[in-house]
Structure formats: structure tokens, C-alpha cells
Amino acid sequence: MKISRRRILRLAAGAAALPAISRNAFAQSYPVRPLRWVVGFAAGGGGDIISRIMAAWLAERLGQPVVVENRPGGASNISVQHVASSPADGYTLLWLPSSAAINASLYDSLPFNLVRDIAPIAGLVDFPLVMEANPSLPAKTIPELIALAKAEPGKSTLASYGTGSTSHVAGELFKMMAGIKMIHVPYRGGAPMTTDLIGGQVQVGIDVSTGARPPFQSGALRALGICGARTSMFPDVPSIGESVSGYEASAWGGVGTTRGTPPEIIERLNRELNAGLANPAVKARLADVATTPLVFAAKEFDAYVTSEVEKWSKVVKLAGIKPA
Image (cartoon, rainbow, N blue to C red; front, top):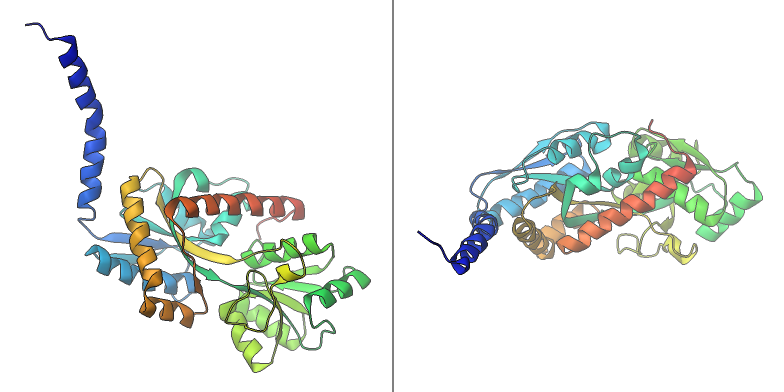
């Protein structure tokens, strides 16, 4: 039996199309079972709270449970590794924090590559970073702080909530761009840092808005500047970038999954999560924990994460930062 050349070509084309057809069918039926949302921090923290708010929204939209699973340790590295090695089927999601972008260069050897192994799905929130000072500090503004640090190089202290944290690299970037020297004082968390700031043991510190807002509102600390854009949470506090041109730093969080997940699934998840960020009830809950929505298309968030990895790798290298 002879088969015409035309028929052979049709059969070959049909065979080539099968993987695409099966992927599309898989994406259209997704999801058919519960999803896991892996968080690299303990229950009760900012990332965990945001994840639970958005997981509940996503479960309602997808018609399947979305179970939050806490896998703390390694400054989020353990959670990233777990998701990176999971099947690329859209059933394992990752709370993707700004710390993961810093860790990509902070640690000499990781069993994964963030950009290669994790597919960013959607941004979720920005935790505005605030530079605060003890009220006894003579400097009341960012320009005055820079002038003070230049007049007495290496005498002023700048605290962070941890070596290699977003707070730390934001401070190092500020010192580089302002051309000043300040002594870095690391703490194990925002609470002990705030306690020493109020007590006067350190002069200046950078904290997320969640921790910075209460002492600012009570007058226990003075807010000098917002590390990112101005925010309604601190309406009278200027952006540091208004004094140090081009400066910007933020603690952000989003969602990722295993690289290789069908793009149709990533687009579906992005669409549903962005719908949540636009929902008034969800926005109100996010505002309650001092965050602002971070809305990206999937490709935009992918590019943003890559740019953050590149940005902080330069700071980590120039400042000589090593893991604690």
C-alpha cells in the first residue's frame, strides 16, 4: 500500500500538533484538584497573612481549595527549592518575596536558580519601606541626614532587620547613592530593631510599613523618608528619591510556580489574582496590614523579578554582604 507524500505531511503535522492540543486541553480543565501555596516563613508573618487572604480569593475563583503550606527556613530558600523541584503543572504555588531576589546573589551556592527555575505569575503587594529615626537625631529630613553623615563619616548608625534582608540592602543602596558612610547595625527582626531605635541605641533604621507605622503615629520615632514612592499611609513623608535621584527600594511579594508550567495556566492564575487585587473587600484587607497592591501582567512580573535580581546582585557585591 502506497501513501502519498501529501498524506505523510498531513500525518506529520497532526503528530506535531498533539503536544499543543494536549497542553491546551490540560489547561482548559485546570484545576481538577486542590492547589498548594508554599510560604517560606512561619505562620502569622506578613507573607503568610497576605498568602492566606489571596489563597482564599483564588480558591473561590478556581472552585478548588488552595491550601497554604508553611515551609520556613533559609530566608525563603527552602520554599523556593521545594517549588522549583515540583511538577510544572500549576498545582504548587510559591509566595515569591523580594528576599528571594536578594538571595540569588547573597548565597554562593544554591540548589536552584531563581530566574531559571521559578516562573513568576503575578505581583501581589508592596510593603513600603520607611527610613525612621530617633527623635533626638538632629537630622529631620533626608538632606539633613546626608549632611550629618558627611560631616561625621562613619559615626551615624543605620539599622536593619537582618543581614542580607531587604532592609539591609535598601540601606546599603542609600549609602552608595548618597555618597555617605554609616555603620550598619543588623537585628534579628523588626521588633528588636524598633525597640533599640526608640531607646536611642541606634539612630536610624529601615523597616516595613507594618512595623514602622505604629511608632511613627505615636511620635516615638520620626519618619525621614519612604524608600519607594510616596504612600497614603505616610501622607506627609517624602520619598527618598526626591532627595537622592533614582533611589528606590521596596519589600514586595508575589506568586510564582515551577518554570515550565503551561502559559495558559499562568495567564489564568494571573487574571484571577489581579481580579482579587481590584476587589474592594480584598483591597481593604490588604490595606489593614499596611500594604499596597502590586499589579502586573505575568510577563511584566517576570521581567520585574529578573530586574530585581540584577539590581540587588550589584549592591550585594559592592557592599560585600555575606549571609549571617
